[in-house]
Length: 209
Image 1 (cartoon, rainbow, N blue to C red):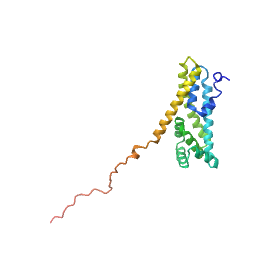
Image 2: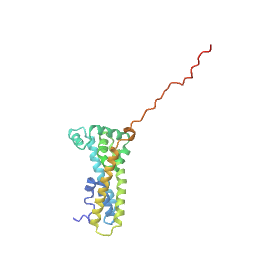
Image 3: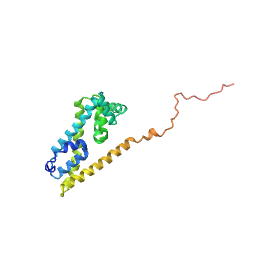
Image 4: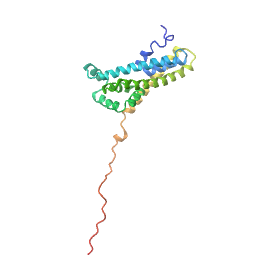
């Protein structure tokens, strides 16, 4: 089967493995006229929802020994899970949208949503909105590249996929480094000004003799 004649065949699995790079590559095919925008958008969003639902369910059943062991292997310790659970309980939309920008936060964020027992309807609504917005932007970026290309389509998809993967890895590493840097206010001690609540006293007056 020629994948260029059937560009939707492997898009779903590729999005599950490497979402942003696969989405940009699919967008380049849209720009080159080999795929249509709406089917690509639907496949990308549904694949995102499938992967995020698996993480959510893993969190819901994290009390089972096998699920707990898998979470530890994924680097989600009890302390880290508790921290993300608190964040997702306070502000689910912000955490979901942040995880759509920084993929390395997806596992702890969506697992914690399951641990916190966020209603699935609410969870999937925010995840679908974030997935659709991100997919539209990435497909548009890929389509812009594909529309300017008039040569070998196989070369186009290869170049776009490699470039998108390199940019994604670099972006994720940059975010991880910035996230791991200590805050200046917490690393450098600052002198504490001494304050007093006592009322000012007037200078003592010696008794008149």
